[in-house]
Length: 235
Ligand code: ATP
Image 1 (cartoon, rainbow, N blue to C red):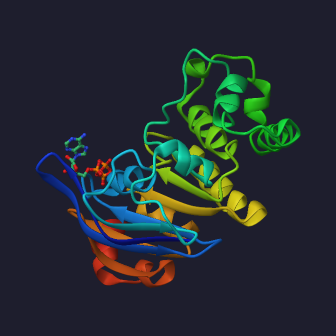
Image 2 (tube, protein in one colour):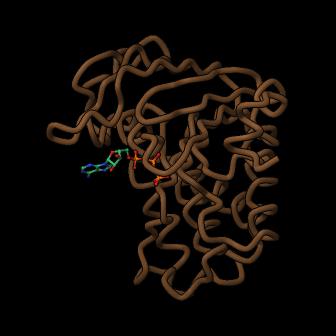
């Protein structure tokens, strides 16, 4: 479904991605784990066209999207849940959801997806007329995921969904990630510092260190790998 081939991304003279290759099959949950500053967010921003790569190729469903504009990439079925949520604080919950569907014209489908989201997150239904900025951190994360889902993505990119949330909310968010994958067949690329949780829900994973992929395996393989255990799982 998605292939990154030797991708290099820079901020000025700083090489944040130093030639990374990642392959994602349809229906998979893939995680990229790594420490602060490893280049995980940059990977997602590069895929969705916000920071185009300096070198390498990005192929999505057989098409070269390396230098495509972000709105075109969203229209092709890739949407992102950004780090830190970035919901629209002065818009209501419902208006935030509508913003996620701004490229769609299928009014019936939009309504169906909104109803599905309100089933998935009943708390958002209760708060549909409340300003996004007044929601709790966990509710804002639910809203950010929902807004991305309103674009009806085939590939969902998630940047640190667990960041700053209480453990119980993190559990809820991760069980929803599995549900979205299983019920809709949505392919998910999940970037996380919380490697324990990410490897529980993912099928396969990549380890990233200072702009390079240093390991790649099934989630099971990574969980039992002594180096991963030592560096990322705290066991
Ligand atoms: P975190 O988990 O802290 O978000 P990360 O793995 O997502 O980390 P990135 O945010 O992708 O890492 O950062 C990769 C490297 O690129 C870091 O060295 C960072 O300082 C640098 N970087 C990121 N954004 C910018 C920017 N806008 N300008 C300059 N350098 C940047």
